[in-house]
Length: 415
Image (cartoon, rainbow, N blue to C red; front, side, top):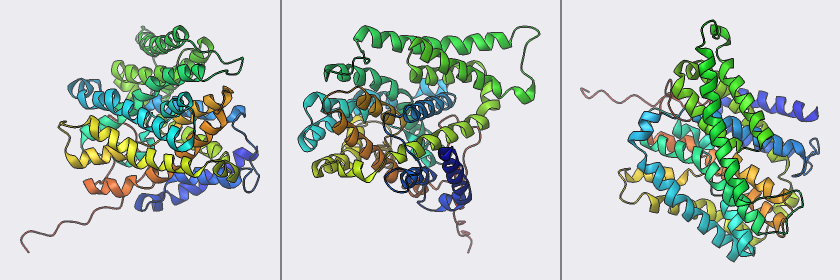
């Protein structure tokens, strides 16, 4: 119950400071992370959680599922078919380069063996633009840039997971309860995709049966019910819930635009709440002992992963693309590590592999540093594009509720 009280207090403070956050580098995401760290065992001792606590894995898992489901509902299939090359470059070339570069610095600077270093690279490869939402949810920011970041983050979680599981198995001996094999991983991915496609289609078919249909005020609950059933079905069948969430959101929005429109505000609010809860719990894990457990070489590896490896990887993948240089630089910078990396990092720790604790420490510090720098720089960089108001009915990732101060009016040319 103390956790609930702390969350409520942090939520109240975040709402009261949201106007200030809209005009400065202050971030509500960072506020919840700091609140968790302050209330955790490292400082005040109000929240008692460890990386093995069920609440940690549950909140991160649910937050990632919720964010991916709402992200999927903001993907426009016609626009994606017309401009798929840039996301394909980022996923097909940029992501493997970031994976390899992070693994290299983890091995050379943090002293991890090659298999564990590759595992760290796979865990930190996914990006999460929910921490850069002032970029991807604003109408003045070029659509191709928003689409690139949104599609990349929506798909790279599912692409990284099988690599993470295979490398955990290769880094063994793992805990007896942890099992991973290529056929099993393949079935989980296929199962997640199948559930993510079939369930929304089945729900849409039910709605169109004569005599059935949602009342207007209850219509926002239809996608919510679909998501709840999908989440439970994935965990009961061991299907991949993240691939299922993103594909279900995209399919549901495609076959039922009215459901997408009705669910938009509720979905964004639920995604924000799930994100904040996960950040609070993750923040409680960020104790002085955790930061003290990382070597100087590990901190250098974290710095390089954030400021060099991700930007260089994406810039190389976008060579000769039609995205202009300024957009390329913004896309390269906004590669924050988020909930997928939290979930996968916990898998590494809970698998009980050799050097698992060292790998988790490096991963956790990198995620915390990424949230700090990326969630504090999104609004200032967004202003380079003269951002004004959020786009109504945006077809991409929902923005964090920020309202930047209006830009000064241009002088009258006649004066």
